Length: 101
Image (cartoon, rainbow, N blue to C red):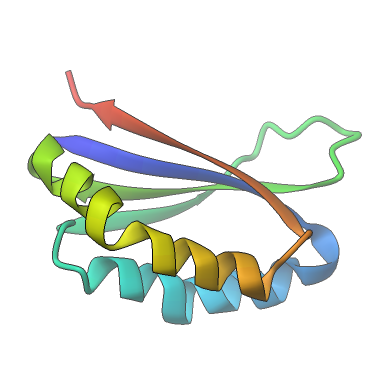
């Protein structure tokens, strides 16, 4: 199994709106690409007390690395743009690809 992991720190002033949008739109749109068979929406609970936002991880599970590569090549840009346009200057994100061992 391979995991495409997106870690996002979101500003607290838009956190509730962001969680609703992620759950009702963005995650469903990523899953609709057909490249992933499962997803998890996780909240980091070991935040530093002085953290400026709240950190979440969204994990998309793929059967093959090729599925993730195809998603990144064909689908990721417009979905990431929609997220960036909606929450511009309100988040920081980084993406990683993991392999279950």
